[in-house]
Every structure is written in structure tokens, then in C-alpha cells.
Image (tube, rainbow, N blue to C red; front, side, top):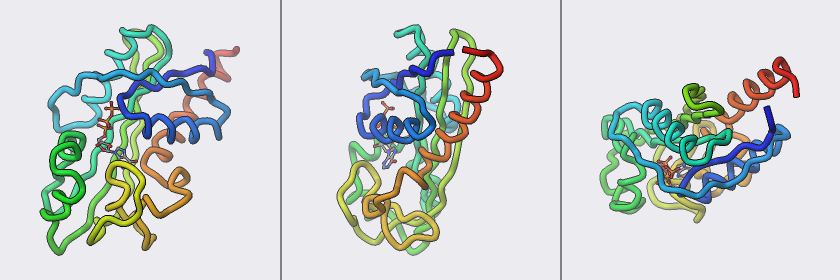
Length: 187
Ligand code: ITT
């Protein structure tokens, strides 16, 4: 197993964070910029699995994809699997207008790795938190409105986001599995 892995996504921010996280495990991530089909499904796992198979069929190299959802309790989990669409349409300002007094929310990441046509491995994580009253800080996506549990700042305002994020927790599971598997298979 080589340590060169591709990250297939249309979102450069996700790639840059993933690259920096996996570098900490000695893994080299390359960007494969593409737009993958998002099947309509409630389960991020199913969406991620589908995206991983599609990406592997395009590049025939070990590849990671990630599907992320922001689940807001008072909106019964909305936008969840529709987070990408909602960000592009309502944006943070529009979403903030929908959130009521119960501001609890969670970010979920599902990482799907495909190293061979028929085999997809999934690694997931959740970070609980709450939705801020207004946008704070200016990173990307939902970062300005999500405050992780135990913090008073949004993801945008936390310099070490990559050490606590949903992406970090899921990629850490992936890296531990990948490095362990590589060790037992040999170079
Ligand atoms: P690909 O599917 O092409 O990888 P995407 O941007 O559509 O890119 P997702 O479906 O995984 O990616 O993400 C759903 C939405 O959540 C999207 O609008 C992202 O910008 C946003 N998002 C994902 N991870 C985030 C993070 O760490 N911080 C803030 N917003 C995030």
C-alpha cells in the first residue's frame, strides 16, 4: 500500500484541512478536483460510499471522499444530508433565521476510502455544539456559525480547528486503520 492517497472533492477547503490533518500521520494527500454525484439519501454513509466508488472509477487510485452534514436539533436534523444545497441557497444568514431558542447542533463527517473497486471503508465522527446567534469570524462554509461543545468561539475563530473538528476525528480513525493495515500487509 502506498502512502499517496487522493482526496476527491469539489471543495478545496475540505481538501486543505484533510491534507494538513493527514500530514500529521505521515500520509501524503493529493487533490483530485471533481464534482461527484450526491445520491439523495438520509444517510451520509450511503452518499459517501457512492461518491467513493464513483471517484475510484475515475482515477483507479486509492481515494478518499468525505460527506459532511450539519444537523440542527430544533430543525429536526435539517439541513443534514442537504447541507451543501442549503449552504449554496440560504447560506449562513438564511439558516440563522430558521434557528430558534434550542440552538444545539452537531457536525457529522463520513470519510469513505476506496483502494480497490469493490471495497469501501467508512470512518465517521460527530462533534456536538451549538449554532451561534450571528456569524463570527470568516473562515469557510458553516464555520462562522458553529460553536463546538466546550468552547465559546466558532470554528472560524478557533485556530486549532484541525485538532478538534469532525474532519479530524474521522480522519484519525482512517489513518489508524490505514497505517495498521499497511503494516500488516508490508511495503
Ligand atoms: P464535495 O461533496 O464535492 O466534497 P461539498 O462542499 O459539497 O464538497 P459536503 O457535502 O461534504 O461537501 O459538505 C456539505 C456542506 O457543509 C458544504 O456546504 C460545506 O461547505 C460544509 N462543510 C463541510 N465541512 C465543513 C467544515 O469543516 N466547516 C464548515 N462547513 C463545512
